[in-house]
Image (tube, rainbow, N blue to C red; front, side, top):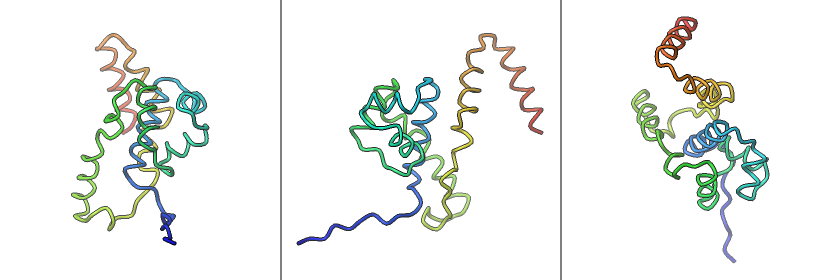
Length: 142
């Protein structure tokens, strides 16, 4: 009998973290709860949580269902990953396996607060008002 190797437990793969963070950002932008997204694709909200953290890899069929539910192409979830990987490699001059991985790397960008801020920012119709708001927030961060 052939023995199947189990995947060793460890930090989530950076690709799974990236894809999960993009799912979370898009879900929040659409004002969908994890429960509603789970219902739409046939999984529990706990599974959606695991997908969004990157601790569970999203299968192709569920990624397709998520993309259709959120109104994006499947490739949306991978956008920006290669640039971030090149940036990490360039910064350290090493491969991903030689670097410490942080499973919360994108957490601040995909937090509910950040996504809602961006969502509401782009609802502002007047470009001058948006520009002033941007400059104000930038000045506060200094």
